[in-house]
Length: 168
Image (cartoon, rainbow, N blue to C red; front, side, top):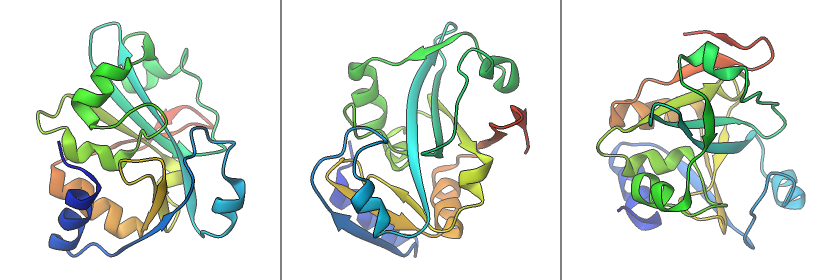
């Protein structure tokens, strides 16, 4: 599993500019508002999910986005969704609860996880994610984030959570 240093080395090797602010641990979206106030761009909430067909899902959305997990399966083509357990999270993303991040996709080398990106987050620039630990926030431009996903061979499903429609 790659750690924070390996993640930063990967970003550097792919020419993806990033800046990181270290801070006390933040476990939920509502925490750390003072930290977020000092960082421009889109701040994220990330949900690690498993569906009734054993498919794994990661949703990255703006922190204020409402996600209806009961209606979402019809949009993304999943089975009934529930939260994935911490052991599976650690095995696939290399993170623990409270540190879920799209940057953890660097550890999903078997491509077990389908990635869903909030349309509002896809429009934000820069985007802010935990760098595999909830004691820091890393900012990356939207173009850099897309370059990161492309380097991993990941094509996100982009969903407008307001209308619950698949965009691209």
